[in-house]
Length: 204
Image 1 (cartoon, one colour):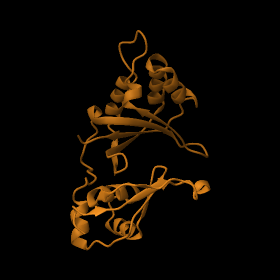
Image 2: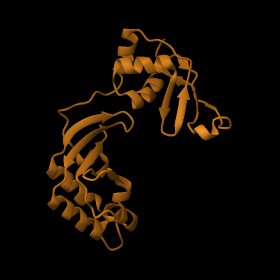
Image 3: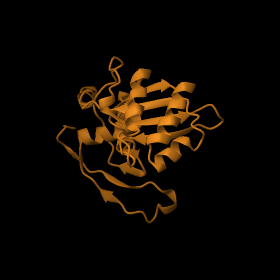
């Protein structure tokens, strides 16, 4: 198969209770597009990618994609994967490239998390000269989060840092002062017992 070849891909909502009635849609893809879709499920593991292309099925969000399975030889597979980023352990966290932050709490029997996107946290409250995003990024830079992985789903490098009691106190204080109501409720609703901070940064 050549990179310019078109693969006829079908997809529908992956809801078992509506298996007989869900509409089937078509989305022709070039090989690069299809490999990009598959990477969201497999990561950059050649054998997993090969098996997924051969099986002809891949989940993505609430959808299930399928196509007529095919084989790629080693050279073609390597060339296809070379078009996508590799993880880069030496790449430092850059607040200016941050897309979102996620607080997580894993000390209890069940883990909980709160996602904070830049657009939401960057919105200022009335009569506030600063948004919650600013102190959040200042905290992230001070923590010097460690490189964790590259996400093909988010198309971003992922970083992680542990949160201390002073960090949590700062989050509470700044959320109360700067975050809009819905975000403030999400962050403080569980007592702000967050233990980790994950951040996603684009490379662009």
